[in-house]
Image 1 (cartoon, helix red, strand yellow):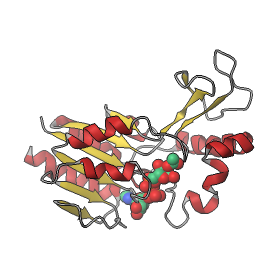
Image 2 (image 1 turned 45 degrees about the vertical axis):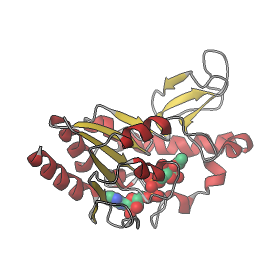
Image 3 (image 1 turned 90 degrees about the vertical axis):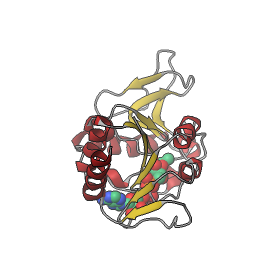
Length: 229
Ligand code: OAD
């Protein structure tokens, strides 16, 4: 089976009702990154940080996977599909994809502030100050904040380098190291970028830009790839 590696960003979940970050009306217009998504923010005002992620989690519980997530799961019928997502939602998993690598953490999980190996599923939407791990330390959202290391990037880079087909969906390619993953994909490998407002990466070899929303563009591309397999 050929290996299809897919890099996704907030745009794939937009049609599920989850706000992107940098589009007009996006989350980073409403909030400042430095106030809610950095270790310094957590040090300064953990209540505000918890509240920001609690609201995101609450919205996620009401969201459903869309045609883009579901189509990617169908691709597994004929391809070895590996999804690398910058998203902290679980819509790929709920859409049926079986191998999903989260680069920026997972909204539905909490992590101990004293032992990063202690990770827990959050029951419901609320994580509170005073919620602790089994060692008694405060739990924080299991999110990779700006300024923190991205531990899964090493696995993602290896996957990108092994791709037979590489697909990028719904990302502004503004945040590194995720945006640099496309440089690990061998030149001759066919690459597709699905985004209605695609970032300019025209210097990438063998790139086809599909300027459509994920809910339309992903099922179309998946049909084509399934027919070719
Ligand atoms: P951005 O908000 O930066 O970019 C969203 C992309 O999705 C843009 O290129 C849009 O054109 C596109 N888009 C919007 N609606 C779409 C749709 N219906 N179908 C397809 N594409 C659509 O989001 P990311 O690139 O994911 O990190 O942002 C990267 C990281 O920055 C996030 O993981 C997050 C953020 O700050 C952290 O919080 C650590």
